Image (cartoon, rainbow, N blue to C red; front, side, top):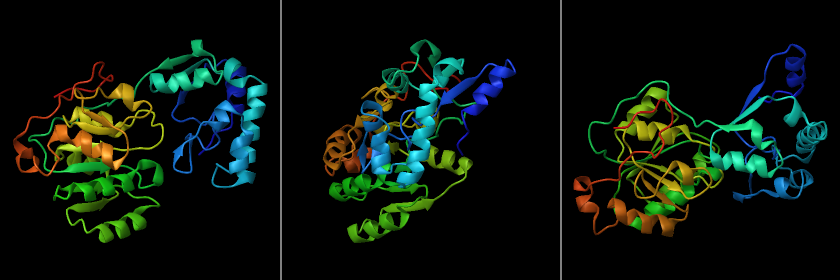
Length: 292
C-alpha cells in the first residue's frame, strides 16, 4: 500500500514530527527496487524518472508508472522530502548513500539496522541442509541456486521456503534437472521459518537486487546459522566474508568456488557434517540480536 506524501503537510499543521523509514527505494525509483530486466537498474536515479516511464517499471505499465513518477516529481519540486520530513531512517549505510547521491539531505538520514525484539535461541546442532527463505521471484535468484546445485553433482539437501510467481517455473526446472534432494516447503508461518533455520547448516541469500537489510539474515545470525549471500548492496556491510559467513556473486560458478570453504564440493561433501563452520558474529550486531 502506498501512502500519499500529503500526510506530511497534515503532520506539520498539527506540529507532529515526521519520521519515515526508507524500507525501499520508492522515492528514487517508481518500482522501488532499482531492478529491471533481471539486473540492477539505477536509470531513474542517474538520468531521470522518465526512464522508468519509458520502461513501464511500476506494475509493467507506463500509465501507472507515469502516475507514480508525476507524484515523485511534484514533491521533489516542492522539496517535500527536505522540508516536511524531520528524520529519515535508512536500514544500512549503503541505502543511505544511495539517497544522499540522489540529492536527499544527508543530515536528515540516520542509519538504524533491522533487529529482533525477541531472541529465537541458538540451534542445537550443526544443521542438516542448506536453506533459502523468501519470495520466489526473478530478483531473488532461485534459478541461480538450482543451477549451482545441479553442477555440484552430489546429493546435498537443499530446502526452499516461500511462494511467489516463479514457483511453477522453478518446480518445472527442478524436475528437468532431476534434483531429488531439493525440496519446496511452500509459504511457512514465522515460527516454522525459525524452526527451519535452526535445522539448517547454512542460509543462502542470492538476491540479484539491492536488499536493504533482510530479516532472514538477522534471524539466521541470531540462530547461529552462517549465510552464503550475494556480494551486492547492503549485504557487503552486513556480512564479513569468511567471518560471519561467505559472500558470493549470484552466479553458479562463483557459488561453487566459494562453497569450497564450507565443504560443499564432491570431494569434501562426505566430511561436511564434521567440519567447522564460519563464526556467526557480526562486527556491530544489530540492536536486540544476540550471538550464539
